[in-house]
Length: 396
Image (spheres, rainbow, N blue to C red):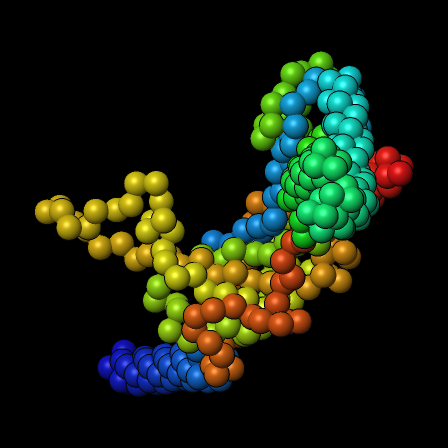
């Protein structure tokens, strides 16, 4: 009986082994198929998508940080802005004590008024000497006629020699007076030649001194040069400051961009004007920022460091460098989701469009506008108007 069952058990084991082998081959085929499918999908993804994107996590928010400096000397009397406060261009941030500036302004005003009166007198002298010259010319003509008449009559004895000599003396006196008046007219005329009371050099010099004193008095109120947020305040009440001392910093909230540092191996297909998708750590992947490559750096960060690398040394090791790429942000998206300077970002550049410039920046209305301010020009205009008022008030 045992001799009959042994072959049956062997056959069953062979069948089981064959089934297991078939299952292993099937699983292997499925695994190979899955790997091939994954490889095919990855190849398709790389060919159609991945090779047109460059991404980096080495990206940070940057912004225009405007340092507000003192433009004159003085003692801090009041501080009207604190850190994190939103300010508008022209808002008063700091006030300095006005006593010294007011004294200097009063002196400059008096000097301008005095210069105006003096130059006006010179112009009046020119007019007076011109009238005197007319009189002197007339006197010379009258004296010359008298001499001419007596010169004929003195020969016939109708006029005495003494009377003739008196006429000659009168002529000489008239000629001397004429010469004196002419020199006076030349001297006064030389002082005002080619000028008016409004543009005479003496008045212009006094006017410039007045403008300087006036603008200096206005600079006692330190103004915000642009819209933004106070980032750091360094000044304290009662502090004696000098010209050029930094008082506080303002970050222009509408002038933010992203500084993305790409490896040099990623730059081959990067072009100015390419679209960028960005995410921030603060808002997460749920908020996507749309940006544009505004410019690609002309050098690596190490090239512009205080101590640049000296690669011509014996123990040199190659390190892949990074190039800063400036990415312009959308102003409306910044309003909806404000960013702060220094925040971390992830930048993903779509490189499909490769017809843009490799060097340079986005120009025209597509580029980020430069910061400008006109808050300081108003002081000069007011100073000119006040100076003209003083000049006109002292003309007579």
